[in-house]
Length: 132
Image (cartoon, rainbow, N blue to C red; front, side):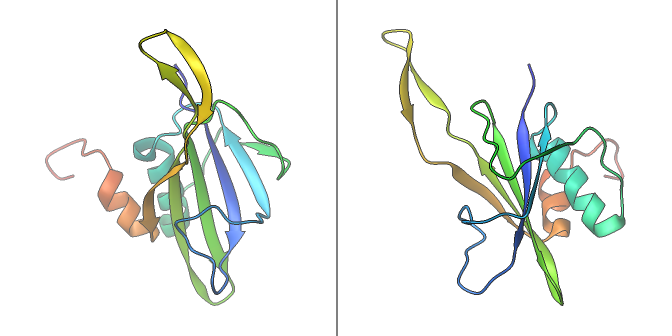
């Protein structure tokens, strides 16, 4: 099963919270698989902090919306300001365990992370050996 995500780029502006979806974005990419924070989130953070290359992104129009996303990432940047990242867990159509049907009701997306790239790496990096 794929973990789908969108990566959106937004401008840091006074009065715009990192923990809410902004009204405007400037660019958007789609990632069909491995969109979870321990995968794509860490890759984004390393790309910003360490210049890593990210593969497998598809450029999209800024108004494209997918119904099957699990995560939405925002990369917040502007001139002379540090880059921050927000991660939202997307609330999709809920499933009723009693009647075994989808309800058609969508809850609110949940902001699960706000911070600088280094904080994201420290929070989500999966340790692969004793050295971390």
